Length: 206
Image (cartoon, rainbow, N blue to C red; front, side, top):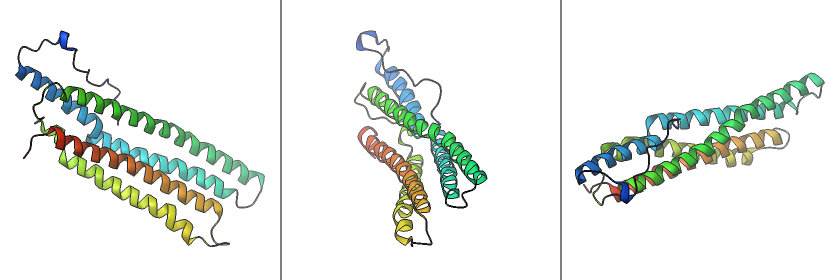
């Protein structure tokens, strides 16, 4: 998950730099870049990404279950339970949507700071933590699977709906669940592709 500790600071302005030599500068640059890359692409960040997706689907599932209950008997007890289920779903859903937005902003800040550190010197970044090929592939594959599942839910389920057998609420739930998967997968894929482009630009040639 995004760490509550602050990001590594940006490199100091030119007139405040006190590195004794270039090697010291490159060592500090490698440490900052490795930490910033971990904040964006690391295993904890990937776990948070997946847990957030599960939470979003759970929240939307509760909202969908509440809405579906309104299609049943119109007695007061059913309506009360359905209303409480929808409220509970929103209680889960809304904070997680906010967390996703904050996570995107966190990633943008970390990437911008990483580029600031990289620009300190034209030398390629050799830190293995920066390349992280296994993590970037994991991000890409998981994101692709989410996008594929999301597109299938969003289009196949509504296309297979039949009047009298499938309610509008069920179609809306499937489309909402698909949209959550698709948007989440798209965010992850953009991150993985962006990291790969950054590696090709800043890492040493094989």
